[in-house]
Amino acid sequence: MKTHKFTLPLSPNSIRLLSPGDKVLLSGTLYTARDKAHRRLVDLIRQGKPLPFKLPETAIFYCGPSPIPPGKVCGSIGPTTSSRMDAYTPILLEHGLRVMIGKGERSPEVQAAVKQHQALYLVATGGVAAYLSTHVTKFELFLWPELGAEAIYKMEVADFPCYVAL
Amino acid sequence: MRNILFVDSALLHEKLLEALGQIYCRPDETVLNLIREYEAKETHPLAKDMLQSILRNADVAREQSLPCCQDTGTPVLFIRKGEDFCLGDGDIMSTIESALEQGWQKYHLRRSMVEEPLFERKIIQDRPAPVIHWENVPGNTLEVKLALKGGGAENMAAHYMLPTSTTAEEVVEKVVTHVVNVGGQPCPPVIVGIGLGGNFESSALLAKRALLEPTGRAHPDVRYAELEQKILNEINRCGKGVMGLGAGPTALAVHILTEPCHIASLPLAVNLDCHAHRHTGFTL
Image (cartoon, rainbow over all chains, first blue to last red; front, side, top):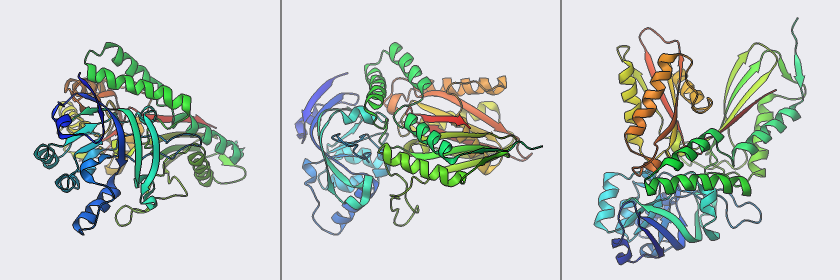
C-alpha cells in the first residue's frame, strides 16, 4: 500500500499520482456537507447564486459530526454513506469540485463524472470517529447552523487518513 | 397470589443512563475481540490498516469518553415487562424518555432524528425519539435491551416474502447477494441479523432482535446454526472486505431468529449493524 502525504487543496498533478487502494494523509481544510447541505448547495447553483466557497479549492467531507464536548476541539468525526450524495455530485463536479471524502460505493453516474473531471473520491474508515477526531486541529461552524449536524462545518486536519476509492 | 414488585423510577432512570454511558463510547467487546483476531492474521496492508484504526478508535473513544461513531444512532429498546412489575412513582415510558434525554445531553450525543420523514425533515432537538418494542411476560421483572443503531447500516436492510418452495441454499443466496450488493455502505465488517418466519412486520422485528443476540452465538437448532455459519462463510468468501475496499472480513457474525409462519408464507428480513455494534441490557 502506497502512502501519500498531501496538503489541501490538491493539484491535478497530485490527483494523477493516486491509484485505488492508496492511503492518503490529508492536511488542510475540509468542509463537511451531507444530505441537506448538498441539496442547498445544488439549489444555489441552479438558482445561479454564489456558493459559500470556491468549489475547485474545496474538499467536501460527507460527515455529520457529534457535538463538541467541553474542552475538546471537536466531537466525533466520521464519514457517512456517500451514495446518498450521488444525486447531487455530478453537478458539483461540473462546477469544479474535485475532492470528496465519504464511505461506500458510488453510482455509475458519479464514477463516470469523477473520471471525466479527474476528481478524487476518498474513503475514510467508518465507525472510527473518535480516532479520526484526533486528526482535527481546528473546528468551527461555517454555514447553516439551523441544520444541526447537517450544517456545514469547516475544519483543519493534520494527516487525516483516507484511502483512494475512485 | 400475585407478587407485585414496586420499583422506584429513579432506579430505572439510573440504570438506563448507565447503560447508555457504557455503549455510546464502547462497541461490543466480542466484536473488538474478533477484530483483534482478524487484524493479527490479516496480510493485506489496506485491510490491516483499517482494522487497526478500528482498534485504535475503541481505545480513544473509551479513554476520552467520545462517541465511537459520530452517528450516535437511533436508540432502540426491547422491553420485556413482567405482568407484576410496576414503577411505584411513575410510568416506564416517560422514565425511559427522560433518562435517554439526560444521557444525550450528558454524553454529548448527536441529534440524528427528524420530526417527519419527507418534507422539512427538521432535526428534533429536545428528545432522542427512541424506537421501543414491548413484550408482556409473566413474573415481576423488567428486562431492558438498549442498542444505538446507526443510520448507514440500518438503511441497508432488506425484506422478502419468499415462496414456500424456497430452499435453505436459496436463503443463503438471497442474504449473501444482498450483503455483497450493499458493499461498503453499512461499514463492514457487519453483524447480520436475520428474521425468518413470522409475518411481514414480525420478521423485520426478529431480524433486529437477532442483531442484539450475543455476538457469534449459534442458533440452538443445529440446522439453523449451520445456515448461520454457511451465510457467514459465503459472505466472507465474496471479498467485499472492510469498508468494501476488497480485503479483510465483510461480516463478523450471522444470527438467525425464527418464528412460526402461515402455510403460504416464508418471510425473510435482513438487518445489518456496523462494526461499531453498540448494545447492552439489564434486568430489574
